[in-house]
Length: 370
Image (cartoon, rainbow, N blue to C red):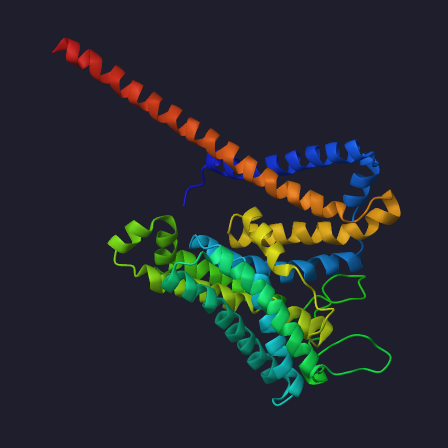
């Protein structure tokens, strides 16, 4: 495959332009609020310590799984806003099963992960059914299902919670020690470890790339997302594809909480990390639904989250500033990709016009001689 330098440059131009726009706009916001612009950027861009690097990678693993789940829907032109609820239901179901310790060690982990995928897929199938059978927008139904999932899981958690003396935490039964994953010590000098289920994220990313890019199912999914009419004409059963894609997205959402369950918390409770589904939407957009782009976006997102902890101490700025930066980056990436897309179209039109002019210039003398 021949590398097109111009195409590669245009591909890199969008994210670079987006980051530049984000830096400028964020600096203007800081200046308007009277915050120390220089101190904020020095803090944000300071080299993370080994422990922070591990936290960045661990955060990116979870965010990557969330973004891949969202991206499956995006490639189908479906907006699965319900990843947040789907992974809550899935993590709770997996924690309940794994906490019983019915199976030994690693087998307990494998079955719990499969249960999480099943629970996430089943929860997503509600929105899929409403979309296919009743024409209900998946945006509306998945948002509503997020709220329902939060309430249902909170109610069930109170029913099965294990009370610990001297603690106000509400958690499920802790999974057996034989099913707790110690992690990999990959970062020199760090006293914490990278989640073992980094392997799961790599496998998911590879399968996402292979299935969507190299199989007939992936082609049908992408074709349906581009044009339902063209997909129907080529023999694709659109309702079945919608159901399959939404359920697959929910099943992948079920994996989001697994690194946390087996590598950090070892139970599901009120302190289990929230908001991962909504972050996945932004990361999928930032990564343009490409597995490598999503990985880089997840690392950037996790880097910003980790560095935000030092903002209040070093720069005297609320750590919520990172939410503003992340939001500006999303707006900037949309603007940047649109600008680059238009520039690419203009360049292509100019190239075609020059080629047509050259062809006419060659034909005209021949006609005059005739």
